[in-house]
Image (cartoon, rainbow, N blue to C red):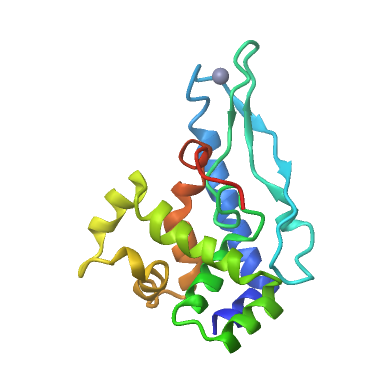
Length: 192
Ligand SMILES: [Zn+2]
């Protein structure tokens, strides 16, 4: 089911709309340093793992820059498409990690064929969810919302299951975890 979404360009349009919303909210808040006006300073990203017919949408990550001379602070809004500095689309990182639960050689081979990722990469993604995300300030607060609690070693699979009631569970999950994609919280995170 998740695989089908990943190959559906419409799903990325939903993610793109959410990203545009997140950027608009960040922009409306103004510069966090000097309260100045923010303007768009988006930058190109070459995400891997999406369908071939994405169009231009996923090639840019929203970014904002302060207009005030002497400040010029850059603010990168949260994103549901890009997880931190990872070059793979956020959705792919979630789905591949979910598929990796109880992985068999056959399933790993399928992951490799679908996304062109190695077993090593998927292992790193799993560590990202179950160690980096699980230990983040974001998750320490966010996990309180879920009852029964979600164990770190079931991430992101169990988290996705908790959004299964919504029309776009994967988009909802990505929106929920989007605070971890902002610069301040991903600076210490290694690039993949
Ligand atoms: Zn400023």
